[in-house]
Image (tube, rainbow, N blue to C red; front, top):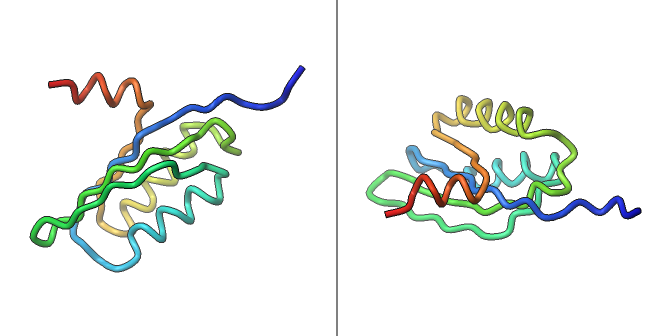
Length: 96
């Protein structure tokens, strides 16, 4: 029996005032939880930072509840709105 976990892609969204270090601090949170960043798309519109990040939590060392708590904490520290959703839920929420 293999202990390999399957991929589980989630989408992280980040919005807020642009500042140095947003992606770096988010990457540190992900690395500490053994979450692989698969793709990043970010833009700065006027002074607003907008980013979507696809991450694979399949081999994460913590559960989704703890991941959300860590992202909430980072969001509060940096005055950002950070959310994470399973890829399928994200797609359903943003279907046109």
